Every structure is written in structure tokens, then in C-alpha cells.
Amino acid sequence: MTSKNIVQVTDQNFEATVGGAEQLVLLDFWATWCAPCKMLRPVVEELAVEYAGRVTVAELDVDANPQTASKFSVLSIPSLILFRGGKPADRIVGYKPKAYLKQKIDAVL
Image (cartoon, rainbow, N blue to C red):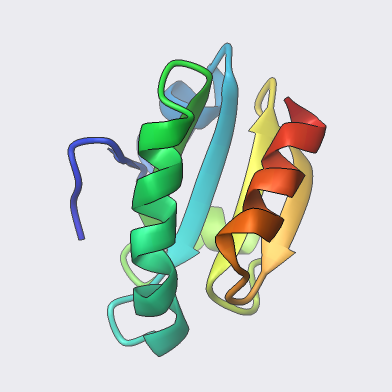
């Protein structure tokens, strides 16, 4: 699922994309077969537009990139992890409404 506002993260580019990011990164761990992930997708796309320039919104397919998912103990999807300075600052598991996600992002910003 690609969108021009969402950065694609892989096991290979994680460090460069998320680890070295200067601004806050919201990383969406998802999979093609995950129904709640598909429900969350439009919300994540809206957040990418609303927070453009302040938050990097990215996604990682857990099936194609198991190392990164394992490194951050992602056991349920969708899982959203907010990274500040390459380190997890907060974690949201499961489908949540946009208002809840904005509150979490704003708290870390």
C-alpha cells in the first residue's frame, strides 16, 4: 500500500529512515491480510497530510520485514510506534480512532 505521503520502511533502510530521523516518526506496522490494518490505512494517510513537515509517517510490512518487527516486539498488528531520535517513545496497538492517534502524537511532539 503506497501513498506519496507515507515513507516505505524495510529491514534494510530502517536505520537510515527511522533511526537517523531528526523529526518524530510514526511507523505503522501492517500486513496485506490484516483487516484492521486496512481500516486504519485512511486514518494514517490523513495524519501524514496533517502532520507533514512535523512528523514523518512511515509504514513497514511485517511479512516482508520480519527483523524490524521482531526487534520492536511487534506481536499484534496494526501497531503504531512513535520514534523520537530513533528510539520508541510510544506505542499504539490495534485500530484506534483518529482523535486518539492525534492525542498520542501531540503528546510526543
